[in-house]
Image (cartoon, rainbow, N blue to C red):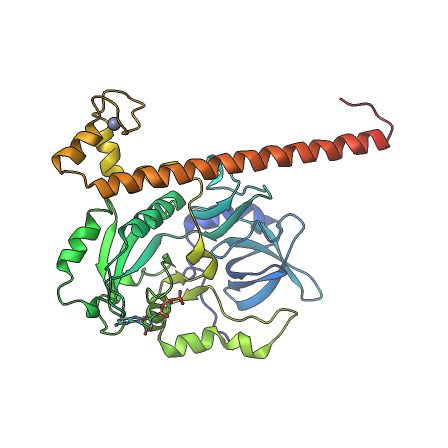
Length: 363
Ligand SMILES: Nc1nc2c(ncn2[C@@H]2O[C@H](COP(=O)(O)OP(=O)(O)OP(=O)(O)O)[C@@H](O)[C@H]2O)c(=O)[nH]1
Ligand SMILES: [Zn+2]
């Protein structure tokens, strides 16, 4: 039997209670979504774990792991997600506008992958078993932009530090590409740096990072075998149409929640202006000294960023990375605009068609 957790253990606080109030009046109950599938989702509430279908106003693309949902129960025992509370933070993929981060988009082209995350762990291995280069700085920069954009606070985890003799140089190098973010050396194998990773009671962490960075090993180390067993217990009972494989939001022993989803592991840059600004705060700061306010730091006269590269204060690699990620973000934004326009045109075509059918004239 999956153990029940108090709402507070799941991250509930006064803010959520206030946001939920209208739903209490409507007779709905709060639950946190720990896994979201196409047909239904898995929710945890004060009474335990259950499967809930999607209500008419909360289709699958609106809900995501980490969401707080308002659950409606029916006399026959069925439950559905009647509403999703506005998010505090969110990883969003697809065509949602910048202003919609905290809220629900309802836009079919926007897909949230994880919500209400307080801290994001970006796992990057200190070294690879096969030898070769150390941490991939460009990848760290990309994931930092993504993490900042979500609204959560990033911490870079240098994993598998047992593989290097002296990680201090490495940590310094990584600190240089992660302004404003925390950095933590970790070894799941050696039991190093694990305790600081516990997000604390009621707080939610999410794990990003490439394949082979040691994320699963880390999750297992933080959860312990016993918890993994209880949280996977529903996989065996096979109740409902969809067999629950495992939760994507785990309740850690001793408090705190951890989101580990395959979807999050693969997400690329999307709406990232703000995220890039935070991830490259050092470049932004230098840019304030450029002669032109719209300086592209390419070849402009009086460019303070290029001057910093010249003097050795800013590595060329970092400026190249900034250029590359900005181009990628701009391209993604352009693609989204095009898709939104196409969608808008399609909607109007349908409306016009229906109007003609019902014999009315165009507006
Ligand atoms: N030396 C060392 N090896 C580790 C450590 N953590 C994980 N590994 C090894 O690294 C490999 C990859 O670890 P995983 O935990 O599967 O990596 P992952 O990030 O979950 O990878 P995906 O599931 O592909 O996303 C495995 O062979 C682990 O045994 C560590 O702290 N030190
Ligand atoms: Zn410039």
